[in-house]
Image (cartoon, rainbow, N blue to C red; front, side, top):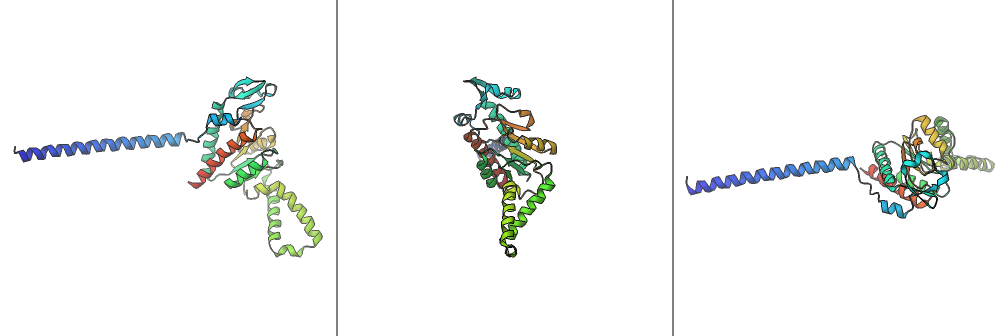
Length: 271
């Protein structure tokens, strides 16, 4: 065999080997990408930081005398007669709740926010409005879920008054009539402002305090609406589909959880 032929054969072998190696590398990279994608889809990173939750006092429960027995699995210890929530469990359960919220929002299903405690009512409204979702931050009226058709009529009345105030139709009323209608409008606004764009029952509700808004939990159970809720040490977590063991009194605790929910919703809506 001539030297030129030998050289050509050697070069061909090298080229084949290089192509084979490149194919192997490409295949490995594809497999790696596939595994990473599956892992990402299976366990999304919500950036839940245990140290940050600790600084915000999310782990503080109630006095030991107020413990609900079903909250025991979520506790870590007792400090100065106060139950301490296990933040590892909080992270685990918050992740489950966020995954569920991510799933329903991506399917264009509706989540209703509920929080009527004075210290958090503005927070619930702010979060819901940012997410473009309905909310209840005043007293929960019996029938919001179980008697929705009747509630819808009251919502429609609220919209009718709003419409009449925005156009010339309002001018046909006397001063006395306007005062009366304004009074009715204000009453309806307080009760239904947060849910005036709700056309049907929500798929799920998020509740900040299931003890204060127990009626909301009860109605959701009757209508088959999923419940996500913060569960402090004094409540029964078995009433909730997605309990989040955490302090429901501290504004810092509520803010953190609402922020995580807001991030997930806005991200899901943008994709």
